[in-house]
Image 1 (cartoon, rainbow, N blue to C red):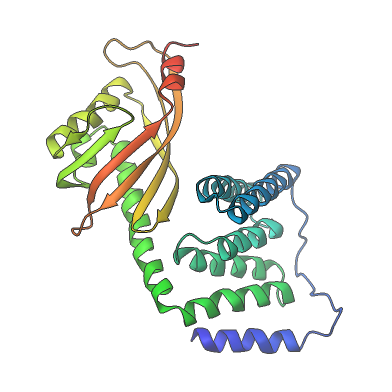
Image 2 (cartoon, rainbow, N blue to C red):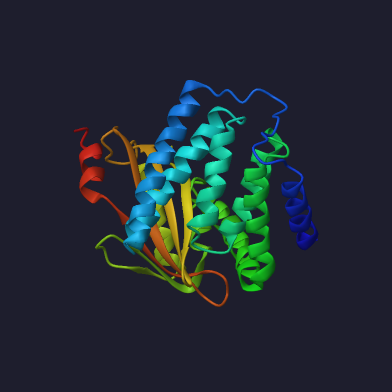
Length: 275
């Protein structure tokens, strides 16, 4: 099926005369806010390329994440933001962390193609991304595995918003562990339940949002942002917004065997104090 699509894309390219321009079926003017977000994405994309070139993959991944967020923001502001769809596809297609990014590239290129049917640049990119998956079955298999993890992390995020700490613990193996910054690890579901309860009690209106899920070898990096008001027992009444991430080791049962959590504790304390 995909090979047939690649062949069709190649034929379509041959049918476009040199120098000819594809004809969009609709206006592709975007709002200023969407354009600003696209420019921000381009900025971070360039930075990510530099870090990847220097083999600084940690900083490259962080800059890449910022670029993805900016392009997605542009699309949220204006779904007809063709450049955002195209650049997001390029980002996934060029600086891929796992096979799932190739699938994301295909979907983004298709969305761009819907805005500019017959565009030679998109057809070329789309054919390349799908051809990669055809030639690398392991990448396609990893893509399906990562999609399962994205479903997993979506449910995990919802558990943190539920005010039911046991729901969070259920995502961990029976003897799994959760370590937050330099604190002692909470080992076992009962201990993890109490660790989650501490946050939920402190912030009765707590909302956790998933920012990104990255794969690094066999491990996953779950990036999140927590917002809430410290109105729990002994609370200060101040609002907190803090971002962080968890480094996950997934066990053979498909649950979290170990999680290393990180966030800026000094900034957290400052916000709690209202400074």
